[in-house]
Structure formats: C-alpha cells, structure tokens
Length: 240
Ligand SMILES: Nc1ncnc2c1ncn2[C@@H]1O[C@H](COP(=O)(O)OP(=O)(O)OP(=O)(O)O)[C@@H](O)[C@H]1O
Image (cartoon, rainbow, N blue to C red; front, side):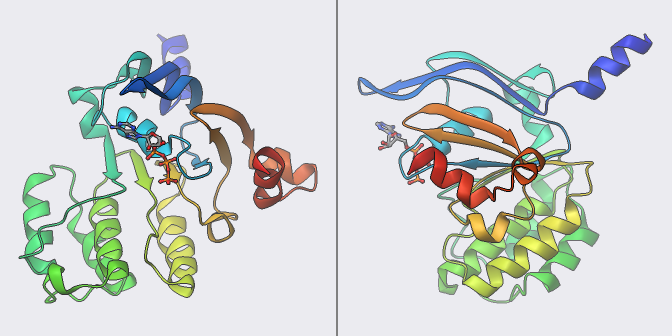
C-alpha cells in the first residue's frame, strides 16, 4: 500500500511514449517521448512549425496520435483525463457576441472546477474590462481573457499554448511573474509552449526542446544554471 503511494508521488503529470503524428503523408511528430514532472513549470520550446501545438492538442485529447501513448497523471489521455487539465489553445474562439462578464458566467457553469474567488482576483490582476464585448477587444485583451478562463479552473495540469500572443512586453512580464508565479506553488503542473523565453526564463524549472517533430533535448533548469547557462543560451545551442 505504502509503496503504491510512493509510486503515485513520483508519477509524471504528462508522459508521452513514442508519439507520432502523420497528416497528409507529412510526418509532424516522430516518436516523441518525454515526461512533464509533477509540480513543475515545464517549457515546451522550439521554432515555428516544430510540432508544439500538434503535441499539446494530442496531450489534451483534441487530436489523436497516429501511434504512441499519452498518460495524464498515470492514466491514459482521453475523456476521463479532461477533468484534470485546463487548456489554453493556440487559436481559441471565444464567443465574440458576449461581454467578458457574460462569457465568464457561462464558463463558471460549464467547468465543475471553476474557482470564482480566483476568477475575481485574476479579473483584477489581468485588468479585464468585464463589460467589453469580446469582438471589440484587441488581440492582447482577448488573450488575457483566455488566460483568465484557463487559470480560473483548479485542474491540476494547466496547458498553455502561446499564452502571450498579442500581449505587449511589459504586460507579458507582469502576467508571467504575478499570475503564473502566484499559481505555481508546486501543487499544479504547468506545460507552456511559448516563444517568449526571456519573460518566462525565471519561471521555468524544466525544459523540453522540440524541433522538426522530434525531441532535441530535455533539461532541468537548475542543471543548466549550474553550468552557467541561461534558458536562452541553451535554446540557441540546441537550435542555432
Ligand atoms: N492538419 C494538418 N495537416 C497537415 N499539416 C499540418 C496539420 N497541422 C499542422 N501541420 C503542420 O505540422 C507542423 C507543426 O505545426 P504546429 O502548429 O504543431 O507547430 P508549432 O511548433 O506549434 O509552430 P508555431 O510555433 O509556429 O506555433 C507544421 O509544419 C504545420 O504546417
């Protein structure tokens, strides 16, 4: 019994084994294997077209791999695992005809793990204009609302696909440090695909590098720092 519990403690939040994806005869992911350790903020980094969004869609069960397996907290990905993860997709359509407040009231109704206190706090932190219609928001404002929706849930795994698209530089830094930092107390796991390495550098504690649909490297950030390397320097080393 005790050893089972110990096993659960060590369980990865996400585990991918030999995940491949082929679409229209093109190999998008080629035998991708990696783990996202529980309680970490893991960065999924790689150039445009590397396969990050495709991989996150498979992990989130929005797409099916051609072969390979994905486990979420030790259970096969799929419908049952959906309640354990909160996803911010790369191209998400929020209902443009609603105001932010109307959308958030709707989201509260559909997500059983909605945390209204957190939602109200984040509405303030992310400076969401509750009475603005979504269709009249700027790209950055809509991105903040999407982030708010995702982070107002208490799911133990948060998957963010390019959360800062369209968000200005100062706001990116503020959001990265205050919001994600405050929520990442080690009880939740974050898997974040982003090109904003500088803003996220201090938050990441684990990295997975993907290029051309293949895993190029996986490292603990502590390990890099001990070698005197920044995340940015390591990224250049892998991809330049
Ligand atoms: N349904 C599809 N059919 C064919 N090719 C696809 C399909 N979906 C994605 N691709 C291709 O797969 C590759 C990986 O795309 P993906 O969006 O996963 O990359 P990414 O790493 O998220 O890129 P970016 O950083 O630009 O967002 C790209 O070359 C893309 O054109």
